[in-house]
Image 1 (cartoon, rainbow, N blue to C red):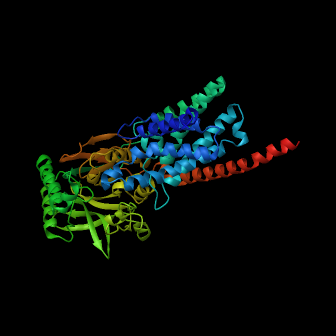
Image 2 (cartoon, rainbow, N blue to C red):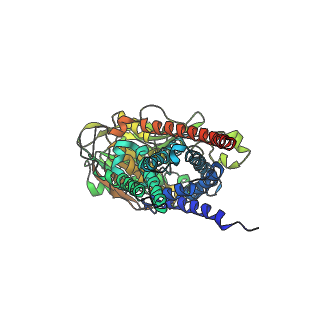
Image 3 (cartoon, rainbow, N blue to C red):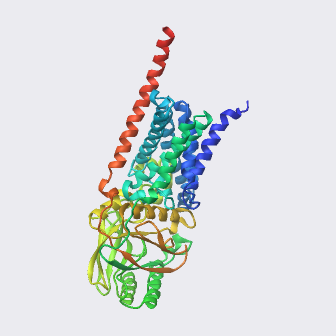
Length: 524
């Protein structure tokens, strides 16, 4: 028996909705597709039961995360991790679909009229944001890739990041999606005033934030930064196994930079994560390469290196002063589960031998989320807020660095294992949003690209092309003020999580009480 077309239509619509939201992220970057996709999802979930809602949410999630997270398959060289991560992330959206199906049956939300329209839009927004907050923080620290906020780097809503953070940005996108769904529903029911109200709200949340003031001026002078992208061969595993090749590439690029700008004209030079394939604190040949580059440019060099101790390893950014060697270092606080360390290794080994591809777990660092460098030209110390690689996706991690006095955000990263996938561009978009959230310029430095300088308004002022050896030089503004978003901290996210939980409980209570009401009415 062939499936009926009416059964397939909602599934197809949910899949198209998920694909539309994926298109809002790099490499497509069509930010406006996110509210449209959510509008389709909200529409297709209307009047569904929880099981149907869960199924449609799952289809939506698979259509979104399958292409969005494909870079994990590129990095691993097989689809096992990609499939597992996609499934886990999609189950969160299955939970959203089931919860929204229940919440949509709350009697107050089923009524016609403007108040109910606004209530439904608000409920949809809060529930979406609550699920996204949980997905981005749990388990093992969560996985924030795919947050709607990170699709808004080119959207008119971006300035709101300085006030509402990532949670606030996501709320605007979700609100716009819910409002568009209500507009379409009201038009179908020929409720002109309801349609006008919902459409006006959608336009307001999308375009009004462009008027929000965002200050990007220097408050403590500038820092003249050289950002070096040394490049790595596309056979990246071989490249990192050939001793000193990666370090040599970055030293070579720094020598070229020194010839271009002259000795003693830069305050600091930043190399990316893993730029030293052998830790210069332990290997003299590596130390010689790093020091020769530092002396040639006449400035301290921030060097990415892996340190091994007590059967674990650490991901460090080391300050290397010319002629003096290694000094202070920042140690990555948030290793990536299943990419840099394996939780539940013994249990998961029974399912897949892939867990042992990570032979030595990366342990979390302790200490401040900042790194102090001595600006060579200015002869003063400057504190940097640090985040290595995927830490750029974690707002609270970067907030710690800003609150500890970081005047500039630095994101060293190693994108070599992701080749030409979308991961680097997704990371750049995350950095643009984080720059606005924290009111800081952000310098992202990659082994193979994208290396970029982003101003505090989220605008990319300079960038490199992938798989080229290059260096950027910029006078980046140093800032000391704290944005409203950082003053609020985790409160918006916690409030949305709490609101979503209350809505879900109310939806379940309504689902239980509805049959009882019907039975009473039948008896009467």
